[in-house]
Length: 372
Ligand code: OSB
Ligand code: MG
Image 1: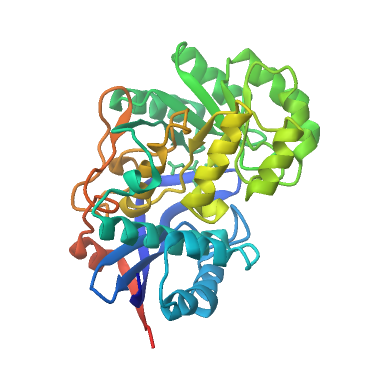
Image 2 (image 1 turned 120 degrees about the vertical axis):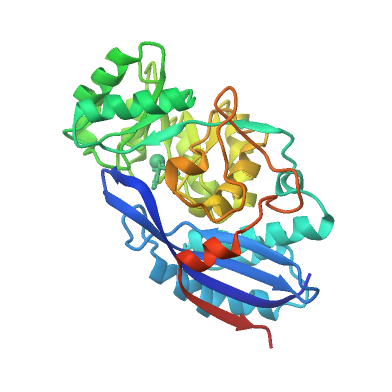
């Protein structure tokens, strides 16, 4: 295909409640949407998962906007023929900036799927009709508030819960949730919040409370500390921030530092790499699953399609629209179905319709770039 224009929409969406992690509190998501258009007038949507500040990783909205405006958009707009695959190969020459790359790749995948008249899930070779999901629960003002929050999510139908933890918010809240829900599948995620010296204590409370999975307790470069925590453990050690490409996954697998793989397209440069990583992990019998970054319905539709791959074996961090936003950007919000699942859209492309009215309400700025 050949593109005629790219539009960057700067969005601001209020979260239904603040989301607190070891790196900070988010009350609203400020993010970029990318809308690519072909010469034939077909539109494709991508979402950039960068946030205002570079707290989760080194990327931010400002760095992503610069990368898109200066490097990625000019090259895709100038190309005579572009496909998601050719873009992915081309984009590897640029170091880092995975969130910016992923915004472009996802928009191209939406476009390429629409041109073929198939869903993004089918384009990716993902056969599932429904995907199993869980919910990620932020740090709460008190242990009692956390227990109430988890109780409400269980009533909503979520079958597995991931608690955000950090030093000082771990053993007590985890024990309280385990007491209230003896059979709940419980995961924790620290977003690199612990010093590597904390491994012994993490092992103790995670084991005592039958935590199924401990995600990224240590810094992204701390592969050995994660391997140490995983050795002989009754829980999986999941890597998120540490895995940014095929090479980092290979090293972590060899070191036995990763016994569960969180796949986020924005962290690895796009769904094509995300799928390859899940396949590589499967060959080492390491389960993969699709993570989340509080996406709007647009980014979440891409995540749901990726989660429909057979290689995604654990429930994703992909919750219903009402867990994140009062008004999502799509006309039919995602809702939680039986067995803690979301339906995989079957219509062309991402299979969800963007609400132009909602887009207008939550848009702060918009910038159009035309092909020469
Ligand atoms: O580490 O998985 C994470 C949200 C923002 C940044 C990092 C993470 C998260 C989540 C939310 O856990 C998952 C979701 O989108 O539901
Ligand atoms: Mg994480």
